[in-house]
Length: 257
Ligand SMILES: Nc1ncnc2c1ncn2[C@@H]1O[C@H](COP(=O)(O)OP(=O)(O)OP(=O)(O)O)[C@@H](O)[C@H]1O
Image 1 (cartoon, rainbow, N blue to C red):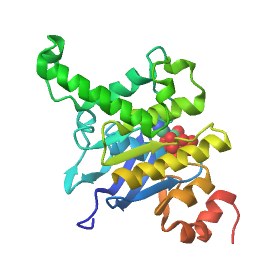
Image 2: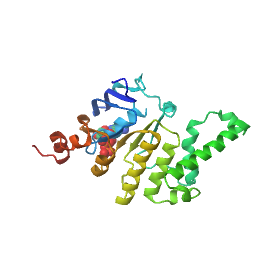
Image 3: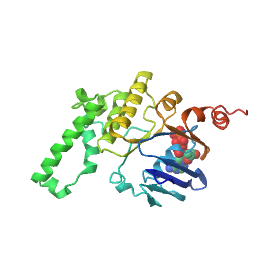
Image 4: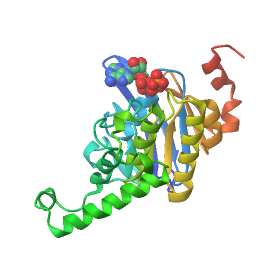
């Protein structure tokens, strides 16, 4: 990896029994970059993200975060490593309010001990007030203030995806992993989400790794694109060059050139 990389995926393979989901993949993500991972269904995109966030253990290779190599990223420590993620399938608490859902993200950064919180010691109370402020700020950043007290389950699909994004942002991650944040959205909702991703990147300098199927969005928001096909990397470069790459066109259209 280059010295400046925030994240390096080094020769990572992932296998499930006999099925190789990911084979010998390497790429770097530089601080401040928006990098998209694209590829046909089953290409291994989510598996790769699950290795970076510690959900899967790679069968080979390693993940280097800030120059520190991990054979397996400890899933309990990802927040402390400055990594936050959203999931392909919505992972919100439907009956909890939007604000409380976002607070569950803030709780990952708790400094006071669980006991201090349980006893509601002054330090813990101050911290709780600070968290609520930060959660409110994240809601405002994403234009969600007016739904703060609504149960998350009552919101439209597009808004719930945005709440999930707010919950990831409130941890102030240096690296944000977004797994199909726009899946199932209307064109308008997709455009809004794309704007929010770009704004988070610009305003907070958040490095973003994005899995997305919508090529229009990918081409618009990405600094760089990594293309997977059948678990292998077939291209890695600027959006314009990747979109003209014959191997990429073949993978998507299944035709020879
Ligand atoms: N937990 C698992 N157990 C067994 N096989 C898995 C598991 N997760 C993924 N796979 C397999 O690994 C391969 C890659 O799947 P993965 O979900 O990573 O692809 P993807 O590119 O994210 O696909 P999609 O775009 O459809 O989400 C597929 O063949 C899939 O069936």
